[in-house]
Length: 238
Image: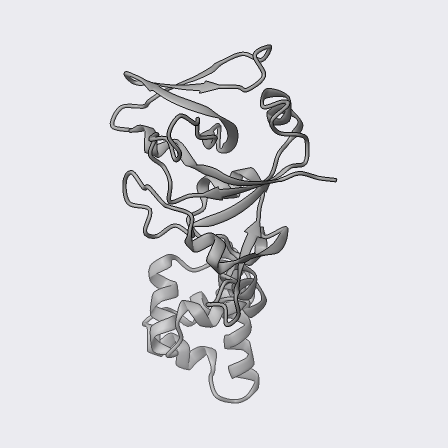
């Protein structure tokens, strides 16, 4: 929500109080120490208030920033994953940008919700490198055409991939088997096999006709800063 919208919502609250006879522009000016003309210009949209001015008005009127937020907007941004009461866990399907960059998946970014048996998810072994405790563990993405080509024939277009974002190490999950990862590149997920060579993250496709891609680790960054998570389950479109 933009600052101008917050100011407009504050105007509405103040006008409601004025029209209800609970406030006058003069009284608000006296409370805040502003000139009456300053308050009048704000109320009539001729000028805005600084952050300090907003704080002062909120304080004297016993309001908080939460009072200026649209409840619908708050609900839209709220997490939709309360603890489940049955044997199934809700897992959000999101776009690759959200899956790669957002620790918590909120309702406005959820495309679909799929149910997984809790017993299945609880048996998936995590292996975090770095602190992922604040990240919602499982998220789903749909494979796009580019990644489908790179991972052909193992993956096809539109495949639904379950990502364990608490598995960011490059250790094999099963001995002798390559892990498949979602990797952060240009604020989106790429799905590839991953190796670390000094300060280079090597992204290998399954399809040998597609090029290998390389990410140079930025100064102070480690591989886990780029690894979104391990692909732990694949659902193919019929």
